[in-house]
Length: 172
Length: 101
Image (cartoon, rainbow over all chains, first blue to last red; front, side, top):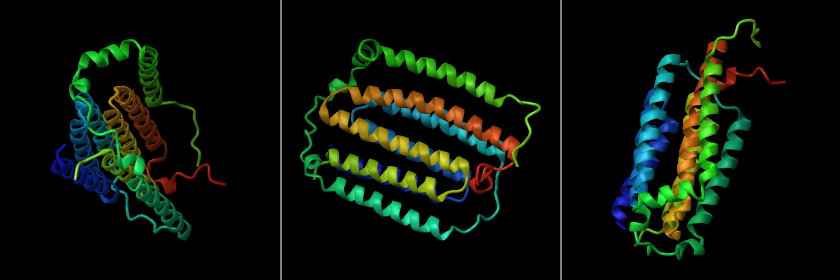
């Protein structure tokens, strides 16, 4: 596996993730998110998951980010200056950040992961779309059905949610 | 130095941490939602890495399902945000405090 490829796209992904969090402009944050997704798709390619890389770009970068951009433009919020953080918020963020960074540090130093099962997988195995299909229609047939049903329910839910309801008084 | 499982796992943990921070620090509901998606993508990266280094296809199939569920989830979540905006004319979390107290 090529080191440069990994480090290049890891940097792209992390930098765009940071841009999502720290960018004031919501549209710019959505575009940074799109860029980060492309970086993750490139890493999927390095992991021999070509189908998932393509699906990630199609579903996430194509549909989800476009949907986000539509909603951002629809709602048109250029909200004013935000309130400063409370002391409690700052304290709890620091504690949570310390915990997460400890987790990353511990992960980086785990001996079990360092001697990973090697990249000795014949890369042709994961390339084969036939295997995907066979898995989806044998072992994972029930999840496929459930997910199909979930998509139907989500569609119905979105239609109901977008309807205008009269006679509901606002909670103020 | 060769790129191993460890590198991918650390990267995915880092992405998850960044997304988590976004959820904590940002006040705009849409950006919070984007950061949630970021955490989901970090988890899928870890799954694909484990699947690749163990030589099985199951992790990949699982990520396939995660992608489907994420698409449905985004549609519903954004519909909720739009409905919320219609009612309250804001998406800033500090102004959405009807359930407080």
